[in-house]
Length: 238
Image (tube, rainbow, N blue to C red; front, top):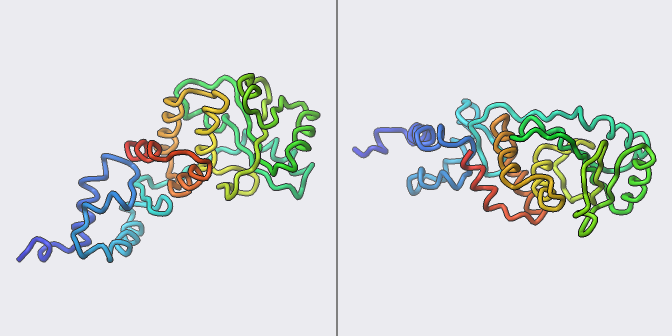
């Protein structure tokens, strides 16, 4: 009698996941399970993964991704509530999303002294939003690129207005953490906000603090033309 006959495949898979994945990483993809699945048994994988989720062995982390982190990530919206309220009042029909580096301050290795808020809005509305926020006392930058980006500095109440990205992960006018992590990676280079190592420290601390939708993060990053290979390696090393 073979080992496969003696041990139920579901139990074998659970043991292999706990032995080879749990404890070594917090996130893994469906691809990581290939070597754990005997030939001819992959058809039952989806059903077992659903069962494992119900049993609290692992949790869904977006399309094709799973995590051992039980609690979903909770994002602090307080730093952007005021500006969101101001924009909603001025432009009740406007589609926009907002996030701030202040929302990530507890996850940075080096204490962030000043913060920048990003407002993503349709291109046609960018100039109007710029004028409104400027008149409201904000230090506003209108889609800084090139020389403007090189001159960029963070003062009090600094806001950067960027064109909206299609299918942004957001809840109403508040950017979700998956959007923030994707945008921040782009802005690290565009505005020299921090070095890349600091970005990855923030990424690791966020992913450890709560479960993030890795599928949504990677899909959004690709729409932002970010090469996700290093993203994936870093995520799997956490």
